[in-house]
Image 1 (cartoon, one colour):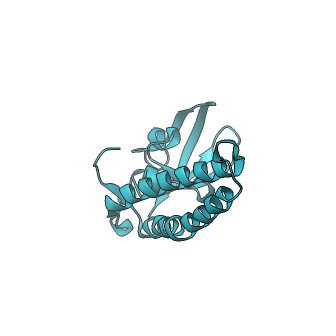
Image 2: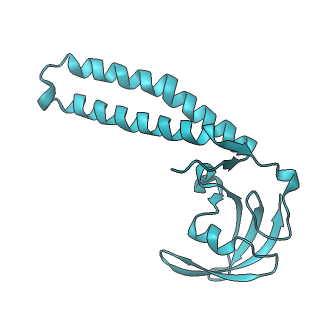
Image 3: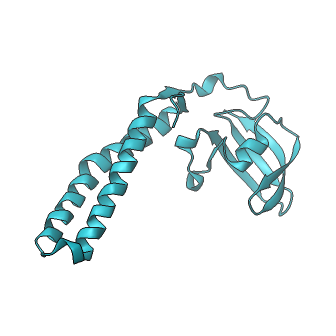
Length: 158
């Protein structure tokens, strides 16, 4: 990872900080207890519970380090200053998929803040890259891993 700034909304920063604290204070403790419990079972070379707990510890520590890195470079976006004439970082966008006539709404955010379950899409994703800079009313064909999708940009807000 580079040393560039990571732009986050206040909500995104708070969500990542909460996740960081949960991993560091709660999950780390649970994993440590699981390792101790597995050690008590004997031979560590053939102890599947111990190996699984060590793997979980490794993954947890990696995620903690990633979040520390992101949070240490966080800069806040002021969503009130977002130019709504085109799709930019921080914009909320209403799209119509011309392939199936479904309407979709996304907020365009940094990779660190993306969460497709909450319709927060990274500007570095295929859809994010394809739509970035386009204006309301534009029809844009975006290339995604599954093929091409055509969107009409219905609205851009903050």
